[in-house]
Image (cartoon, rainbow, N blue to C red; front, side, top):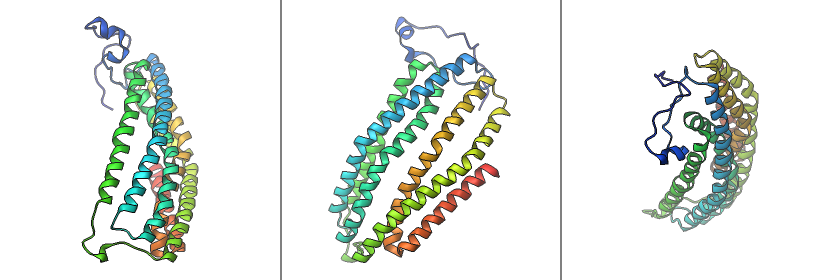
Length: 287
């Protein structure tokens, strides 16, 4: 983080008018400075992190409760309108899409809480906690309108593709459909449990490494304390976030590998994905 010259912590720039004095969201931003971070800044950041995590966790979770059914509906609508897929494959993918729509709000709420903690801490420390709700609401609005909205547009666009010949239509046999469904369930279980377990095992090591980097840095003591608090919050949310994300990933890949290769290969591929995740996490933490 670049060290910049800043006015004293308790000083404030001149106000241009009465409106700026009354609106906390109009305060000039005092960017976080590693050397110039005070206990007052820490207090503002902690309050901001709590507020941001709560607003974005609840807001993004609630948005996903609304958007996930919409995305799932348009996905299913596009799936069944698509001329690129055969009826058996469409039938196989339908429960996978529904299951993903059910799990998405949980992932969104956990991810929103984690993101909101960090964004709220930064916003609260640089401005003040009263500026956090507006920033958090903007993030929720972006998620609701842009991310979810673009997902619907992408699905709609894919559903309008036309095959050039009957050979380009993707279709599977009934027995392959059954394998796909079982593979999806098995993949979700293996990846969800495996990734969650790997995260649980590696969280202590990651937490210790992050804490070590925080405390041996040249940052001011209050900023180190703030970094430690954020690392603690991330450690608490890491396991459920990884488990839900792994389950959703395993659901999709398991279904694909199930109908294309078979149930046992789908389970094996899910286990390989878990190993890749575990090796990557170990590499990042211990090397």
